[in-house]
Length: 143
Image (cartoon, rainbow, N blue to C red; front, side, top):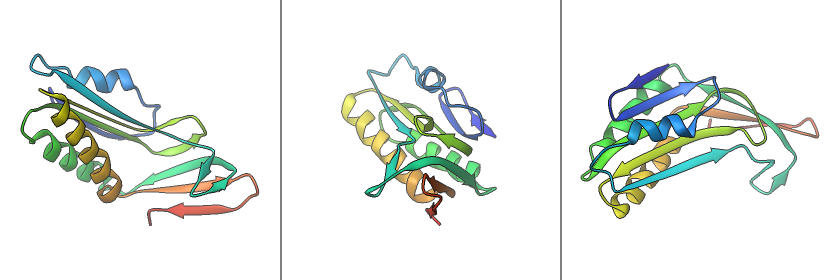
């Protein structure tokens, strides 16, 4: 599912993520800075090695919460465009899990808004991570 306007994009999707697609959405003639955060599935978590894969599960309202988050960040002074896209489903080590991109008139505004976007996304959007380790153990994160 996707919520998209001329300068914003919020999506929770099963398809692989595209940094280029997110960059395209936030392009604006007023923007002097673009900041991106790209979350990648890693082979360890919280000091424990051996992550084999992740399964992300999104609550039915995750899209709505993400869209509201994107709108809040887009409403900040100097922000020109905002995109936040999160994967759901099975991901392997190295896959992109989340892409957040913000354009703004100046770099300070872009960095501040970009950090606010990913931090609020992680804290508020109901998406849970199920980690599967090489030794067969499993762990849920974010419940």
